Length: 504
Image (cartoon, rainbow, N blue to C red; front, side):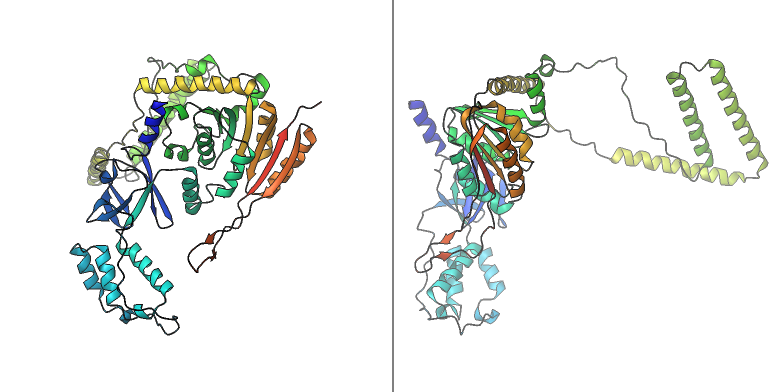
């Protein structure tokens, strides 16, 4: 109990290596805290060393390329009392409305003047600020604050923050999965602690991370992934501890059919590293380039290629006798003698031959110098051999656990949120689900779920089908300015939900 309390209190403090979310107005940006490293945010360059040791939810401001913790109310701008207008009908936007020039404003920034002072000077020298309404003045100050003051709040990554950030940045990578759709997936899948959940996620791993966060380190999450390695960048942003990461298992999507027919996909050969024979000859790639200025070099290159072809034919065709190869060689010698006779008949100036040979040598030297000047590519560091072997062993152990959970039909829920066609995935995973359990399928297209619904109805082992579409509209809630937002997303995708039963 004491360890859990200490662990929870430690998670409330920003530490080196943690992933943080910098919230500025309605925009989010995630980054990792590293000491003595500069970051760039809205044309500002600063280090994150000043936030280490501060609690999450603190407010920071960048002043003179350094980050400083500020109070929640101290950063507000003191607006001079210049009056308020009734409406904005007589205001015309012109550059002459601001009496300060661009050079004077840049001089104030170079002198290190605080953002509050710059905004105050702008308000004092504005000829139209006093004519604006209260709401227009607030909008003007908010715009200037974003330009001259870099103030943000540091938050710990959560499911709500991550999905809002990813959805605003690139909804196509998320399969247009919205926050309300994810909430319904977790509710309809009945996700809770001590459950075994299979998740097919191609939405940057946000569904896998949400399920792991809901389980709280108790249970198992099987991520059915596509490709050689699982791709879930959102899970890394959660900064889960080892107890949470032990509940995460990976299963390749390509081996579902193999598990269906054989019931075993783990072999002893997969966990052993492949041995490399030291006596095996190494193949090197050789390139023969012909120079157009020298005919003799092209002829010699042709003879080399012909001799290599004849040797390869002899090795590949053992039926060829040495006499045949000797005949081929004699033919090649006759051709060379004929070529020599033809060249002897032509009158060639010796000076031209010497000039060609010197030019060839110069070009060869240039190529050698260019090859030497090329820098070798940096090899990617993949860790030591012991670390790779340890990762391979842990992956093999988790694969055995995953296989036992699926073969023994101990899955409590199946969640599919993928860009792939859902019907084959549902039919392959359905046999490992316990009775009276839920299956939830998300897709941004209705037609794929309709066909999946039709095929599942024919099985006879599912009841309580529901195919729904979520609709969401955000509201702005401000004093005397509460109204729906003008811009909204068209759809949050479609959900197909069903419950398994025993077929009699």
